Length: 161
Image (cartoon, rainbow, N blue to C red; front, side, top):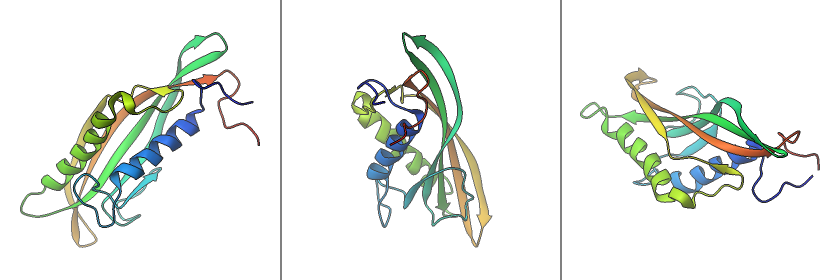
């Protein structure tokens, strides 16, 4: 069953968010507003892919309200930036990565329209101080972010083709 224009699935919303993050924040080599080599989905170790990279991982999902035949679901995701840092200023690289992600969401503002999803404004970052990893120093910044997704009841996953 095709959804109405204001509905989606949780997976479709996460996929679209991931695609937009990749389009805006990935460059080879990483530069300025595009500080990552990749944006991946799921939990990855700091040695899993070439740094710097970002991950997006769904953390929790729960219903917020019901409207007619629709459910509004709150989706919490973890955004994680993994970067190499220098010994002279161990925080500048990770702070730049956080800034680029926040700039992406700030610039998108109301224009970050993912059909059936809303509320991408709030993030709270925590920084894991630099540590040694495979001969270089690595810093990890993690942000918890929630948004809402409107789904049709009984259609919480992608419909069969």
